[in-house]
Image 1 (cartoon, rainbow over the protein chains, first blue to last red):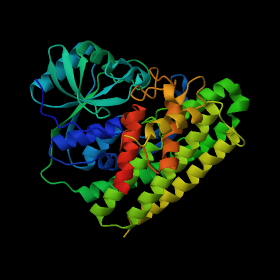
Image 2 (image 1 turned 180 degrees about the horizontal axis):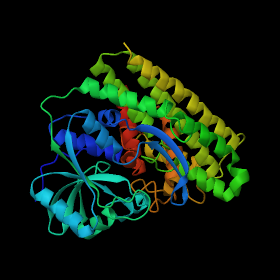
Image 3 (image 1 turned 120 degrees about the horizontal axis):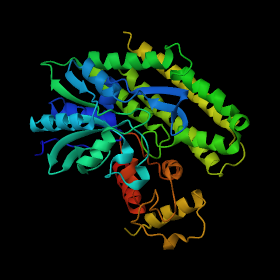
Image 4 (image 1 turned 180 degrees about the vertical axis):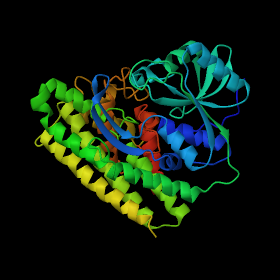
Length: 334
Length: 90
């Protein structure tokens, strides 16, 4: 049994899953639009939460939030479930598939055999859509792959119940009912305001622009605090495979820039076009930081490529993001 | 293609990533560029270096809504993508 699900490949899993599910249910949506309405852009540096024994640094909001916020802002009714046992989780998934319903699922990448070995690391926030079952294989629309893939039931079970940080606990989600009418401009504005708030106004030093500044201050002290080997491990962790290899976390800024460009058309607000360009430029700054960091990690650094210089680059990212989101907030006031 | 872009990219990557003991002409073009199967031993940090170098040298941006995983599959896929973007921008 296979649901006729239009699979599209995207750069990031959850915004891709959200866009593909919305598209299946009759709401044409790009990845950038799903990411933007879902308020996906974020920054947090949380030294006391460890991923692979290293501090959590994230350039996006937590797993599940993009889908939850995007659907809520569009007035879509969704169902989310977690499970106490793999058996009940699998039975419910099978029941939903039999009913012809594509089902989003949170999984641990390490246990998914269709990932090439180079990408199978311990990250439990990977999203995909299960679109059918043939024999003991599930059929899966994973938006970071070009085509749909197959996954043995035993492997998907392990991936859905992977242990550790962000453990999915069998989490699934699906669209129950679409509204008759969508208020897209209102959803876009709400998504933008949310991102501006979390980047600028949340009074916690770990989050948003404050979090970038905290990371800059701490990063400058890493060589003295941790020694060379641990400092390089921490640095590599900040920039490694945040959403797409080769962007060092900047990719989310590029996706958000594409969202602002689309939003400019929907809201008929030309200021967003300029802000989209600035968001791309901020992404380039993040990538410059990541490039220097990777050279330090690889021992290819020359001249000023020190932790102090990296901290200064991060501070520059903070300055530009603060100005960008202040201007973005004011661009909505008409 | 006869513009030798693939070999140019191999030479660039070997130089950028300080790969030793391998000649550009000995590197297969259709094998994985990144990961444990890469004959050059490149990882995700090297990928960042490659992506930025391609943007600077060829004015072609990788990342964001296009998938760098697909583009960086091999030197052939990378060269094809650069040619495609250059044609679109011409």
